Length: 204
Length: 150
Image (cartoon, rainbow over all chains, first blue to last red; front, side):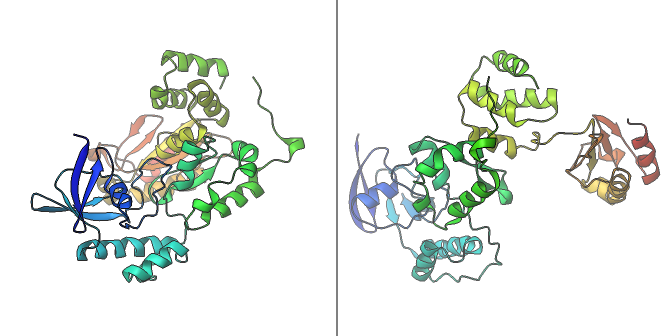
């Protein structure tokens, strides 16, 4: 019941029920690239870079390994031609937003992604959600969240909470793959942190 | 909006965090927008982080985080209205009120929004003011209709 047998890149792997493919692969030292994954956080499936091919009873499909639970008798390929091609496109699309992110540049080299394939839209945030989720799940401060939706979605600090909590924490800073978070923090600080004497109070 | 009234609305939904959306909708329909203080109150009472409320309130177009005018003008930009001249209607309203879609004027008289279909294409071009549908509009009729609102 609890042990699940599967094959990843030709290697027999046993995993506990409820583990994701990504966890099972990392457990035996197989590398799958990720951007939005963090071991302390709940799986999110935001960046899609960890996409892999799963073959189940002869049927192949593409799944996102960081949210796909392991199953018995599946064959996982982390580097098929198709997977590489899709990963390359995902990286190229992300690079339209953050062309100089070190992590993306590194991956682009590996998969032959062309930095300027898509028209630049330098919003710098790639919506990996690491800062937002870290703040909610680990730091439990809820100082930063997403606002708006679709192409207008962006991260935003709550100034009142950020002014109190962030200066002593900043644990989310090293998580950001693009350094946009730091820029957003400085902007919030400059625009909205009140000086202590004029801080509005809302008691009741 | 009074804190007491917000508390009443929250109590009506038994103070459950799962009713957040309904509570926000109730506040929105009563107050026509969601003031920051109200969101803070809801966050406190339901024990839901403000970031989450902010995410939801900015996600749905039904919510407004800025004050709305006394009269909400919705102009249909759907296909049927478009081919019958919705753009000219929009131009007329923009000129008469001095607003662009999404804006509210300083004395809070009108808020202007465009919508993608009001569902009564046979009446196109259609505008909707405070829930009342004005069909088969022409620029002249539109300007006349707007004058009746104070």
